[in-house]
Length: 326
Image (cartoon, rainbow, N blue to C red):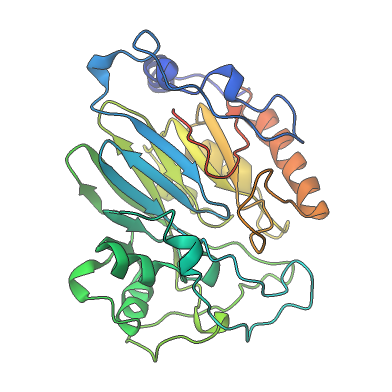
């Protein structure tokens, strides 16, 4: 069991009343957790909260976070187009088809969009959402230039690289330099960056990885939550973050050594670990989340590993569009 230091003890004690109840935690692996009830005044003192905070998973690494009247999106990918990735053969020439009929009912507003990297299943809906809502998009220099290629106004695009701490009043966002996971061939799909605006992308292969970031969201009077978009980690960049909650992308290959041990130790063993990027994200956004058989095995192994590496952490397996309160 990891050693318990004073910083972690104080953080855990302060966060306990704000975390999801035991009823919202996955007791088993096969059944996703249900929504935690909205905290009552007794469970979460009103003096600590500026407003309601909810987290809704949109599949893959995508989230909608509502902080009072403000909405923050992380890697919003709702179109969920079929590329053959789960049924074979995989088709890199798949056209980028934004499903406005799926996006519009779910994205009525957004203040901020945080992009971890620019693969299609993280970025392809972002330019449409930015232009629809006027949200400011934060991402790598590649995300900035791709945004320009889609004619998103430069005034809505902010290039970040890691180390920035962005203050939004009732919450802040710390940008963390990270890494993309490797496939069984020790390579990354669609590698590369964009240092100038390219022609507007037409296929999924036109959206490269473009470097990878993580984001730590700290809510004033609420939880601190770390978001990953891919299953690798530059653990030295995590020093001092110590989030209450970590949204952790599931590993799809074993080529990244000691991924979970390094990530969980770097994050100081969060109170709650939420697996993401475990679903078949080329199907409709309907519960229960569809999981390919091989990914079900990986999910089971991931949950077991988290419980072994960080026995004090609770594992929450989310369902789509369900409001969670931490």
